[in-house]
Length: 149
Image (cartoon, rainbow, N blue to C red):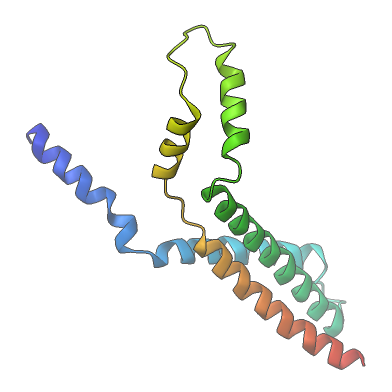
């Protein structure tokens, strides 16, 4: 295979993530479900002696904790993508540049921001799956509160 053909094949294969956007959602939902199950297990939701209310409370806790973490990480990624942390990142990079042995040409802040803008990070899958977990936790919490009162 010639280098030109190999390069074109690599470009075609690199776009597979864009042709399957549901994969990010599925992986995030799978990892979130495993985390929910771990929290429910830790809270005693699978214990044989647990009452129905204890199990319901464990599921509410698990879904809420994981949903909030996912949604908050997605929010942080959004804020980072918009450039809120660029100044801090540039300052740390400039500080570490002082201690490097090989002193390349120092990058200006404008060049640094332009390079950071080129990197596109997706965050919507975290917010969407986190929001779904929070919605289910809200429904279960409503059921829990209605049974108590």
